[in-house]
Amino acid sequence: MSDVCIVGAGIHPFGRTEGRDGMDQGVYAVKQALADTGIKWEDVEFAFGGSSASGAADTMVSQLGLTGIQFINVSNGCATGGSALNAAASAIKSGEYEMGMAVGFDKHPRGAFNADPAAYGLPNWYGEAGYMLTTQFFGAKIMRYLHENGLSTEALGRVSEKAFRNGAKTDHAWRRSEVDLETIMNAPMISDPLNKYMFCSPAEGAVALILASEKKAKELGGPMIRLKTSVMRTRPPGSFEVFAASIDNERGGTATELAAKAAFEQAGMGPEDIDVAQLQDTEAGAEIMHMAENGFCAHGDQEKWLIEGRTEINGALPVNTDGGCLACGEPIGASGLRQVYENVVQLRGTAGERQVPGDPKTAYTQVYGAPGVSAVTILQR
Amino acid sequence: MGAQPIADNLFTDENMTALVGARNKQTGHIFFPLPLTPNDDIEPIALATRGTVWTYTVQRFPPKTPYAGPADPMDFKPYVVAYVSLPGQTMVESRLTGVEPEDVKIGMEVELTAIPLDPDAPADEQIMIHAFQPV
Image (tube, rainbow over all chains, first blue to last red; front, side, top):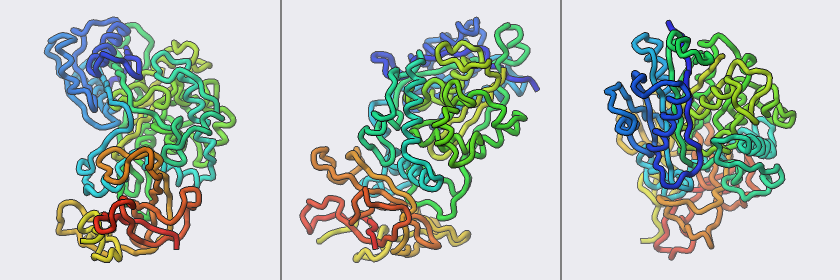
């Protein structure tokens, strides 16, 4: 079975771009990825892509060229990008194709995502009575996690402080200014214990990645960035997910734990082998929980790690080197692929001011979303 | 008329004595609320009216639609949303009442009550929702 390599990567800056819709941002990212690979659209044999709010990805062939390629739309919530990548990698591993593309893009209106109770199998009263807010879920979940693991709310502030510090060094980030810890801790509360600097915002952006077989990648002559594994998992019993009117007294595992375990097994490595990681940080608490759920540290050790700077760019395990969702915002379809994009840049050693020192060789991504899905990738140079 | 519960099948009776939960007859799994579509495997059960706060958060800004309570930013009052663990059953998501957000503690004992969605609405037009209050 051929190894799958990422031979090209393109991104449309995240944040807000007036006058350019989500699809056009996707096309922009694709063109950038093609140029980065040094190929033409005609060379791409197949594509998987998706968006949550900006239309069917396959329609972008009208702008890229009617080459007749297989283009499959992916709709998997927050795991859309990860699922597109997963499917593209499988197509190459199967031996059917030599080179293809995964693309994700989105453009969301300002403010929190609005949700319809019926779409989640919930009665109307659930929304009318004021429970239909993702922010409540995140607040309640991390409130319990901090309590169980003896972590302070300042740990949340430290995650945000790091995100903005890294975002300030990142071309494609939305929030490009540092914010100090005191300012963060004194900001207005949104859903306790999370305040306005601790949530990411719905945003815009796009990422395209070109994948190729090992043979094709060698022909192209670029650095060999191998996709060692790409895994997507759904939730086990007893997990705690968004829009739950009730949760089981008996607590269970998480989709992320399942995905991480499978990814490390498939890649034949462990958390200690990873040089840089991009972890889902929809809000600051998510990064903290995901540090442990992915196996990088024990539950409860996160605050110590943050105080010691272990997840800083020059730390033992740099986490969210481009500022993550907190600094980049969250276009649902593109978010998971942004993490992989950032790792490609880090492994190539071209991340500039935010480059992880010491010539990183392995890089990890994890994206998590509703209703309890998680996707993990491991790259190796 | 008088005050009305926000939905049928939420409480066991018009006095709003207990919440209606759902029990899977095959597995014994208990959850809340009853599913939207009837299912032969699911039977309604009365949920316990006392439990403990497992976790909570505070809704600090007025929600958008479909929220039907008072949402004017000028007089919006933040409300506490908790998961209340009912022993041997499930954890129910519920407002807390009779306690300030600053005074809520994980583990505190609470009991079921009903509160008006809009306290300023005329008494005979009030729509009632479930809430738990400190014991």
